[in-house]
Image (cartoon, rainbow, N blue to C red):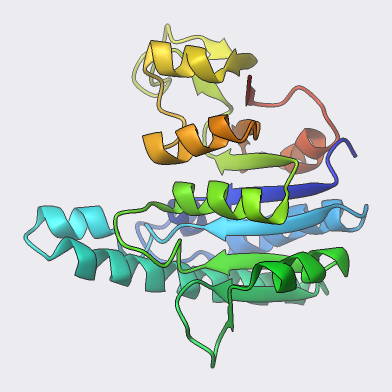
Length: 235
């Protein structure tokens, strides 16, 4: 394996599978099996998961809800997704810990950096829920922040698209895919990889990002092994 310690970023929407909302148990099981393949090879795995399949703070604010209140609801949604993913991973006999930036001691440990690193060193998958614990920050920002804190080698952003394109491949059939692209070129071309705060933080800390299709079986193993899957963003 090319990477020893990774942070896997999953969107909440990814957990819906073919549903319109909520959590698809089959999709969760598929993800757990993919993750097991790399943990069995000694890769240390941390995960940040979104909450868009349950509630999105920005969407709530656009309909008149207080943004701070909406973001707190979104953070709680990520904890729900984290619990669901934890259950699926444990069904595959993968030892897992859920840490939350919001204190919910009955269901998750509080986020403690040293404790998270110790879990990883012992071969446990660590799921980070609750975003950053602060409103106005996305789970992309939480993913980059946690990746830097635990010393991850790379951020793997699992999406339903097989990489970064010059345009939206679902709308623009002439959009071309990049195998490699620099942080500067992403900014110059105005491509949407992550929100600006998260992307800038990753760039400043020289933390590479790989965007790949998580829904294609075997892709996660190939990416961690160093195969040219998806798009790699580097300096």
